[in-house]
Image (cartoon, rainbow, N blue to C red):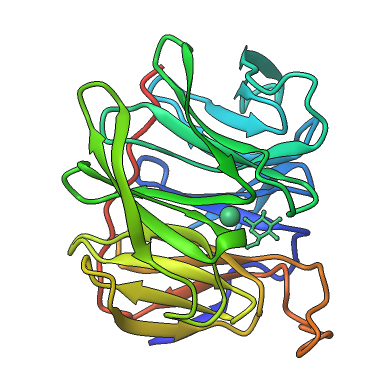
Amino acid sequence: MNIRRLVTFRCELAEGPLWDPDSATIYWVDILGKAVWRADAGGDNPRKWDLPAHVGAMALRRNGGAVVALATGFFSLDFATGRCHVLAEPAAGQTRTRFNDGKVDRRGRLLAGSMDYGEHDPLGALYRLDADFGCTRLMDGFTIFNAPCWSPDGGTFYYADSARGTLFAADYDLKSGTISRSRIFVGPDVAPGAPDGATVDAEGCVWSARWGAGRVVRFTPDGRIDRTIEVPAKKTTSIAFGGPDMDWIYITSMKDPALPDDPADPESGSVYLVTGAGIKGIPEPRFAG
Ligand code: BGC
Ligand code: CA
């Protein structure tokens, strides 16, 4: 197994790595840097799109371009012009929250959730954006919503509240895009660090970026630790599979805040590429609208 930095520069808050099999490129967002990035699989030819606001998540659309979850809602992003247009703005006017993470379900709907900028109060909510841009609030009470991802059959939804240190699992009705029977999947203190972004591999195991602990952890579907990959940057934020055979792993990280036990954290904000881990992921569906 080999791990190296994907690109030489660091982001403020790199997040949401997303492999696009069609173009064989890797996208990610810089939430606080207000940007979408794209690079070749091995990190060459990085390209940046500047956005008008903090960007918590991005999904590619079936008919081209992207949907971005900016601070207050969902916007289209035209890669040719770099322009954003509002699709649905459920948190219009709210200044204490921003969108923080999102992913597309196996039927092409985008689920994205928000967080309290102060990381203190349960002001965040989870929303679903349908192909017709109808927007529904599915859950609330999150301090830091994170880690949305689905089991390979799409019937189990995983998500986290990082402030509670907990990963949850819930039943997901693919027909209606609704959530029921939420339960604790991995509680606090099972693995070091707080649960940040996550993804599910082709064997149904859940990979969780462990914020503050410089690692990603693979959990079996019954919530046991199966494997750990250590990362030089301590504030590990998210993870995605990609590459030519879907067996490369992209891991993002963030710069601030300084951690008491590792204030320098010199590589924080880097994006990493792991090869040779021997596990395949599942390509992310595109947003259906
Ligand atoms: C958020 C950060 C937060 C971190 C904590 C990230 O997803 O974007 O602002 O500090 O989660 O786990
Ligand atoms: Ca995150």
